[in-house]
Amino acid sequence: MSKELRPIFASDIGHFDVPDTREVLPEAWELVRDGQLDMEQFRKFTFENAVELWTAQNPEFFDGTVVADDVRLLRS
Image: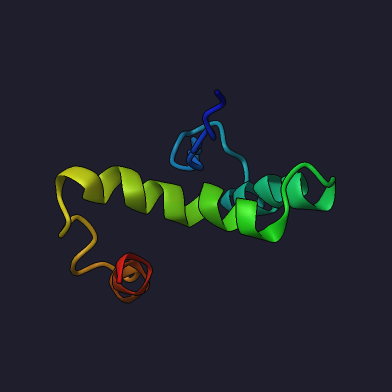
């Protein structure tokens, strides 16, 4: 029996040693560019898996944020 891993995107974007914050997501996109993830897997990695994680205990976790509408669409 196998289980699908549901990783989430995380970054040290706010740390002092990130020289250019504009490079964080393009670096993550290399997973798609290099064929390690497809578009659907990348969306899960950067959005859907995090929504599942954070709303499992608190369905209103993203309310009032810029992604609230997208979260509601995903969860409906």
